[in-house]
Amino acid sequence: MMKWPSPAKKTTLLAVIQLAQRAIERQPSSALAWQRLGEAQLKVGACSEAIFSLSEAIRLQPDNAEVPLQLASAYVRTHNYGPALEMLEGYSRRHPDNQAARIQWFESLVAASRLDDAAGLADEIAICDPLNPALFACRARLAMKNDAWQELLIMCDSKLGISPSHTAARYYRSLAMARIGLQEAAASMDLETFVWVGDLPQPPEFPDEEGFRQEILAEILRNPTLLPDPPGFTCRNAYHTEYLEQPDSPAVRVLLSQVRKAVDDYVGRLEGGDPFVTLRPTEAFLSAWAVAYTASGRQLPHFHDKGWLSGTYYASVPKIPDGTHDGALLLGAINIDPPWGIRAIPALPGRLVLFPSWIPHATAPTHVDELRVCVAFDVVRAS
Image 1: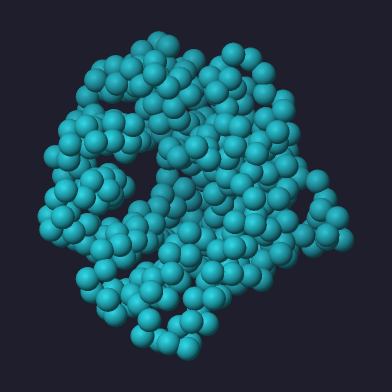
Image 2: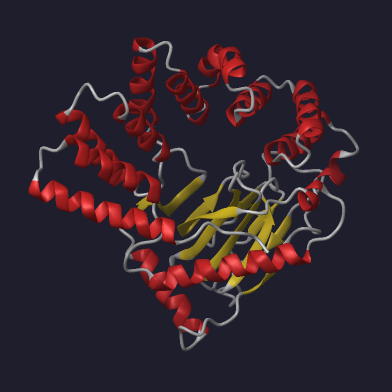
């Protein structure tokens, strides 16, 4: 069974937010209170609120050395890379000996796909932080950009020799093999063995499954962080939550608890010698978000490099005119015709799909005006 970080940690952070807000009500000019509020908001995922709070902290105390880095992190997490990179570059040039700032600058350049700029820092980062995951991501994506597929394959084989369960290396290795046209490419992407499709059990807190899904749907649609087409995401013509768990979202909390139990059951069924099984995490946290797709809404092909296991739960799926459901999950999809094929998993209300995070995937549009709403998630190693 997977160990999940205690929910008490989040409860503590919410208490910190309330205390900081009260302190600000009493003393609005307290830079420290604004900083503590922003830090806690950032940790619970309320990044837009954190940007406002940390900006206030800087306004009130411009010489604070910590807050600019925290604010840059909040900007990056909302995919607002422009102000983040400007802030980090300026800070790093003013404080060239601050390794943490330079590492954050490098990581943010990679996240923003400013790969050529990031490459200028890569050798320095390799010395001070050789295990930084952004290093591999930077070099792998530069190889892709330059169509250096043989170089990418060698890079992935080397990485997997050191870390056999490395999510990004498994994905990029299959992609490189497909681009080179190697015969073994088809067998490198298994779309069956570790994919699970099923339904969640009826939670005792809700009288029926349909009512449970409708409450989840209502909570997602009133989520104040549900924003259209956030920059930097792979969704198109869709809405995406920044912070899924809200104070008034009990059904979402029950759903996430069920997902954790489903992951525990999934882990209990794993067998065989694949590194995905033998090197599975023993402790992880669940990173979840909701996506609401319009009629033309879809996901472009992508994979989840920070996850070990990924998944999606369908809260609401519209029927197309012939009575069936569309908006399928397309496992194995990449930007060329994949040698391993595509496994199309129909989107059905209440369905849960679990798959390794290295598997690329996309979604098909429904072409129906009613929203298709799902909760997607990654199981991320805790250490």
